[in-house]
Image 1 (cartoon, helix red, strand yellow):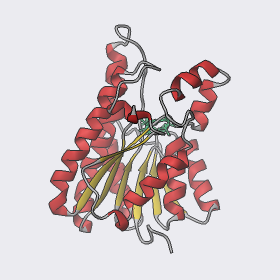
Image 2 (tube, protein in one colour):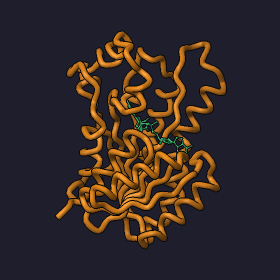
Image 3 (cartoon, protein in one colour):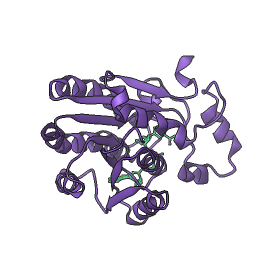
Length: 254
Ligand SMILES: NC(=O)c1ccc[n+]([C@@H]2O[C@H](COP(=O)([O-])OP(=O)(O)OC[C@H]3O[C@@H](n4cnc5c(N)ncnc54)[C@H](O)[C@@H]3O)[C@@H](O)[C@H]2O)c1
């Protein structure tokens, strides 16, 4: 028996590193997954992985989640697949890094749109479905960049957007409580995904600069982040709402 038996989880960015791991762990716990991504191929690979592992996932792609009209259509479609939605896992994001003052207005807007608009749009259009279902859980994937400054890479847009996600989560929890909707945020520290591993390549100095702020002096594996998400999505976490959890190898402890 899984902790998410009978639940339907909507995962955004299900083709990416943390999104794929979350789909796999949620499915292992008995949930049926609807995965949204802009990347058709990557989303398909996730669905195949979930099925190989004995789980159920329906993929919807391409969806540009920065476009509110596409989000509304995709979320309404997602709700019909398994007859409802119980958990919204707001994981998709697009971010640009760079130092002041060179960080352009376009970098800023792309990041705020890619990191803050997406979870708002998805929450907004999923909300009526959760209310009709009698409640549910919204899990927003933020970042420790929303809690502390980050030296490497320079991240002004990322910091602002993720502080926004953490603030938005509190408000969703407040407005959702009377509707039996819980809202929580998870703030990962540096997590090594296939994409970031490839991008960092053999640049050991960059790897050390990123992991130096952790107490454990290493990256997280995606599974180390999403195990908490599976718990928070389950009824075992029924008294947890309105808060943010750092899963960061101790980065925010000092
Ligand atoms: N990897 C880390 O070190 C780290 C650390 C802290 C927080 N996070 C957060 O975790 C989440 C996932 O990160 P990741 O490392 O797996 O990223 P990723 O880039 O591997 O995955 C993001 C996914 O979102 C999708 N996506 C991007 N823009 C989209 C759009 N407009 N419409 C639909 N889909 C879109 C991408 O196609 C991709 O599949 C993000 O919210 C990120 O901010 C990651």
